[in-house]
Image (cartoon, rainbow, N blue to C red):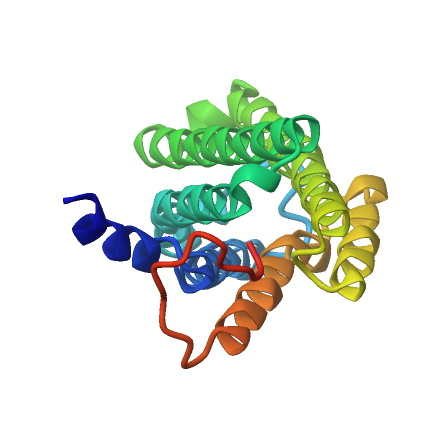
Length: 229
């Protein structure tokens, strides 16, 4: 019975599973960021929220993409960890998992705050702006997503890059590129959409590499299978 089930498990945990999940996350998360940015007029971070009345549908669509992006990202983390197996370093694996989950949690919280502001503005537009709730909620959302979550994304990248170097599961060039991209996330300030797109762009690049590297490779039953996580 064990021999019968094992090939199915190996098929599920191939790098292609992580690659597909990574591609889905990158597309959905990147699309949500772009939709929100296109819906925000110049100076939208200044007091006032009249623009919400005309751009609410685009922002609502972007927020609805976030949960599905989160599911794909969680799958991406799970498959990567499974691929590491016995070579997983406990310290860096803990940082890798913790930073990934924190990024996901803060992204969800930020999206929930944005959704709450959107719904509140639709119900009482003048009251929410004049009371200061809109300005406060907007700033909290901005800091959660663009300060804390993006820093956790940088830590996630550094920890995974370090795991790649220590295990040799990925070429050193990928780790160096990962360190450089993570550094930009850790030191960046402001609300530049290009900085926000670094993380989904990196996930897309890594996932695309997984897909190309394992194109045409059939999963086998061997316990000693080597390859990228």
